[in-house]
Amino acid sequence: MSDSPAAFELLAADLAAQGTDVAAVLAALQQQQIETPSWGYANSGTRFKAFAWPGAATTTAQKLDDAAMVHRMTGIAPSVAIHIPWDRPADGDYAAMCQYAGERGIRIGAVNPNVFQDAQYRLGSLGSPDSGAREAAIEHLVECCQIMRLVGSDALSLWFADGTNYAGQDSLRARKQRFEHGLAATYRHLPPGARMLIEYKFFEPAFYSTDIPDWGTAYAWCLKLGPQAQVLVDLGHHAQGVNIEQIVGFLLDEGRLGGFHFNNRKYADDDLIVGSSNPWELFLIYHELTSAELGADEPARSTARQVAYMLDQSHNIEGKLAPMIYSVLNCQEAYARALCVPHARLAQHQAEGDVLGAHAVLSDAFRRDVRPLLRVVRERLGVPTDPLAALRASGYEARIAAERGVHATAGGFQ
Image (cartoon, rainbow, N blue to C red; front, side):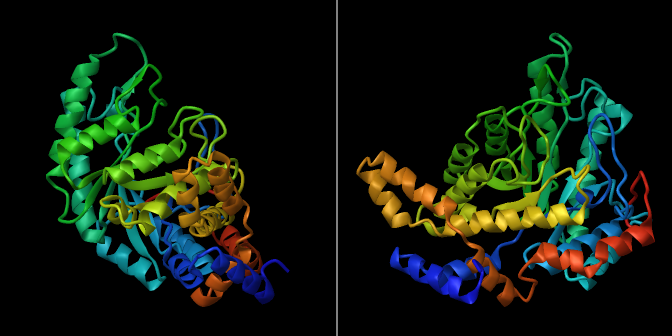
């Protein structure tokens, strides 16, 4: 079998022959971490319909239970991003939430504010012409900075739905200025050592202009805000054909790449399972990250080692836990392939202007069967060698479906 011990020995010998340190690759894979989103375990949908899934989490405690199961199956998903107010405890006891997570072997990760759902944000939040809406948004963002302290989070993950639908609806420069004021007001409340991760999206739900439409806007504001502000790259937030790995390389070199929301898309912000429709792109992104992490260039090297790897997906028709595990495994496989790139050989081809030689090096690494490596990594982590099969065999999904039933809504930590 391709993931048998004999297959690993053959792969290890081949990697060693090309100059790859197999022990270092295994160590790196054992240290890999992917953060799952609390909202990914609850019901979600499109603008047209949300299909309630049997057993989908309806409380934050249930989301943490499910996230813990994903971590037990994979060994590399130890943290859960929370969304406020969706995950706000009814009694405000965030210590109890952290304790609950810790008892299940996981921890709370990034804090995600919500400034797009309430009626007062109809015309925007930080960019709104309504001063009351802007003040409410800033108050909520500051509250989330306080929550970061309570849960031990080091990342404030910001996405805004702000924008306009019609030319002339609002002043574009005024909206820019309002945003800069609101972000600066929030930045001052970040916990020491924490980061503000600014996400961008070129359209939706605003269709004429979006207030943070691209990575350049987010990058420019990060420079104005200070060293604790970095850019968050969501794979679905780009126009068709955009070279995301080039954006990643630029932000790494500038020390401003803060994190990812991993997902996949065919057309726009589809929020599909990462690697499901474009595994080549995912591999190339990981190649940029890995080459920076293993290189000597600063600040790219230190920046790559602090990147927050997070999932942000909407599992509408395919279940909850299995697609989350599948997503984690796709990231694991892409990282393993990137670690197998012979960087010295690639650099030689590039220096010689050998176009096809350089391309072939990357292509060969992408096509490499890394399952023998991953089997060894999972054995060393003490998790199932086939996580999806283990989930099915566990009966966990059937049990929670029976216990929780089918519900259309989700609440906070209870």
